[in-house]
Image (spheres, rainbow, N blue to C red):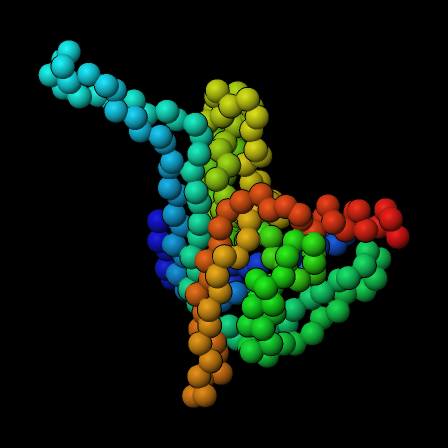
Length: 225
């Protein structure tokens, strides 16, 4: 699925492993991106096995596919980086630091995050937020348009609605503060030109549960310190 348009440029950002750090907002400890194109890909993986002698019995060969619930998911972003304000909070209870970063400084932050690991919660990015408009809520009720983050969750409680047959069910997003896409940046490239003040970029994000993660590592470090 591909999407383009100026209406999405302010609705995509990267969240570092430390998260908002005690503040329920969408501005703390994030890196905003000006995105003009989003490509979302979902690839299903099903072992496909030919059935021996099936063609001898029916005159038509048969394959059996075993659906083991495996797929790979990735998102590719294209856009540009401009000088912007970034808000950082390093400890709960402390005031946030709002600083203006140049475009190259922000690009360096992203490159540094790709080069880090999950045990550096204030460096590594572990969540991608792509907000889009939704007019149908988690219970299939119509509503006024609400911004929610894109993910692969389905509507309904466990065993209900789209989650019929699901033993466990993830929560469908309810508002812009809901969980986005967990994973890691697999690649990030940018172009720096002398005749422009913005920096164009391409970012590939892979969906996965990453271990070790910042929250786990931080909890262990706090416990032994």
